Image (tube, rainbow, N blue to C red; front, side):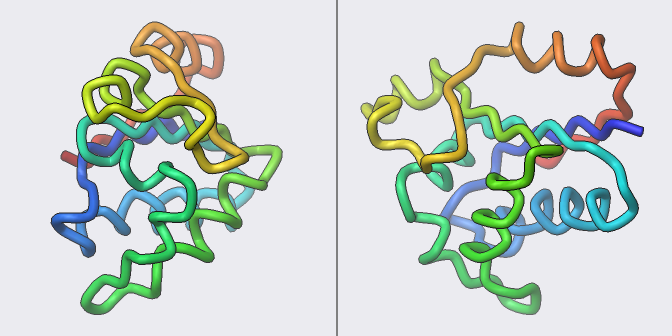
Length: 121
């Protein structure tokens, strides 16, 4: 199974920002592949090592989870290019295992994998 997860939550709500990554990790633990699309303020989580500054109330720290998922060959982390542009950062500032993408890229991943979709935001 393939899970496509979209999230808009960023550093202003650390718990909500962490939840989609916990969902993605749970999917991987059960053998599913994942596309994770970061939109709106969630794109900030992919800005270099910012995810390492996110510590939620309850869930574990986001940084190690983000790194684990982004490095997993069965996980694709997409960062909304228009959202990153609006926040004035580019590809050279992204976490090494993420890439800029559009909603078209996200939709393509859903269609090509006949994915189950989850939205956080």
